[in-house]
Image (cartoon, rainbow, N blue to C red):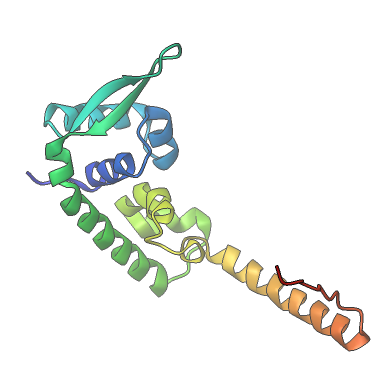
Length: 162
């Protein structure tokens, strides 16, 4: 049984703790709720997921991987690693502004938050303008710290041994 990119992402997200519809919506913000629910139902019908009720007073529906879903987890994770590699390649050739990211990444854009959450993509690769800003701030901070040291105004913290 072959898994699609979004299906792979959902299996890995559920395994990683995003087990409710609300959490999955946060992990896949560009996927509308109806499409997400259809994919969940499809995975459930294929025997890869099951729904359970959690809570005594406040019932909440959560998704769990079935044994068959766990067997497909390696395949799903491999697919996400390949997607992350492809995203890195697409983003390293051009540093697109945020509004062009969906065009540059195509279908991979759906998985961007998940790939970032799993640590498969560095945050600076997905937001090049943030990297430029943080580098500028780092330079400013470095200059200020150097000035403080020269003026003898740097804070010194004494740490006493235990």
